[in-house]
Length: 201
Image 1 (cartoon, rainbow, N blue to C red):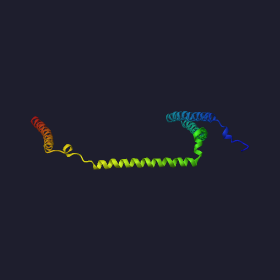
Image 2 (image 1 turned 120 degrees about the vertical axis):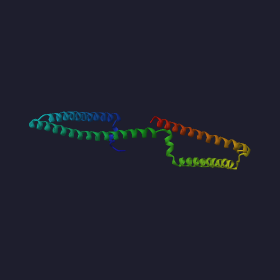
Image 3 (image 1 turned 135 degrees about the vertical axis):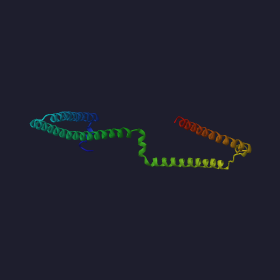
Image 4 (image 1 turned 120 degrees about the horizontal axis):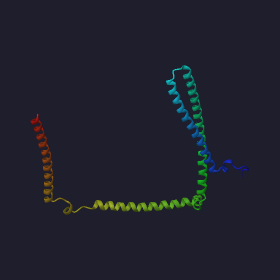
């Protein structure tokens, strides 16, 4: 056993979460400051375009550049804080994984998984039963397929007789006549419309 316990073992998840929240607050403060300075910069630029005095324009330009420098510094701080949050988040995830593994490894049935020899025998027997079951199912499916292939429908029930063929031909003829009548009426209507237009002209 090691004389010194790992420092990270003593860390509480709640402490890590509080640190993340605190850093995120600082990050948001920096972002708010950048937005405020951007608003000031926009206002100063408008003033600079309206003022004609060179010295005043120079003063405004220097102030704008100072604000831009502060924004650049804030951007670097935000990136640093973001990296800090990322590291702490990974630490929190590691603590969660540790607790998850510990809680689930200590479950009673998990101890059985350590007996890999008996587990291997059990899985082999399961696979053997699966093979027997699948073989029986395949054989049954083959029997159904053979029965379907051997079956022939009674022609007296399913085949079309001469009388049926005559009725089918009549149905098709009537359908063709209806289509022709519909298109014929459409042509007549079109011709009537054309004649009316010609008379009007």
